[in-house]
Amino acid sequence: MSDCSYIERDEEVGYGIRDVWIDLTETVEEVAPTTLKGVNAKVTELATIQEQDTQDIYAVIKDGQDRQTQLF
Image 1 (cartoon, one colour):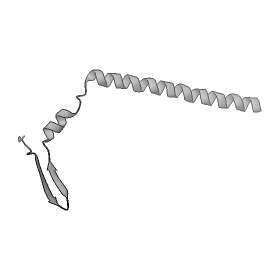
Image 2 (cartoon, helix red, strand yellow; image 1 turned 120 degrees about the horizontal axis):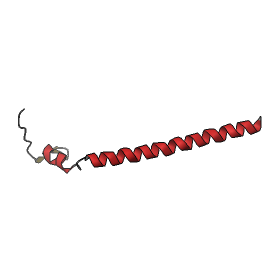
Image 3 (tube, one colour; image 1 turned 135 degrees about the vertical axis):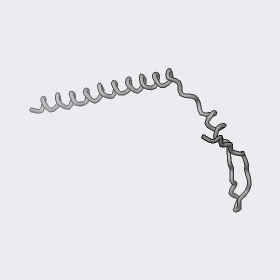
Image 4 (cartoon, helix red, strand yellow; image 1 turned 180 degrees about the vertical axis):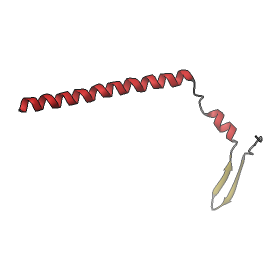
């Protein structure tokens, strides 16, 4: 595996367009690190939302069935 190092440069290439090169390792380091605790919290949040959505769907289905029963 080779050690690639990018040089930061900024130069005009024509028509007012700027050619910008950045060090990708700096960009990656700026991204918030994902921790197992954070992932677990997000999964728990999504599971809770899914459960609530499922209960809402069941309530709508039951309401529809009850209305249909009343019509008959």
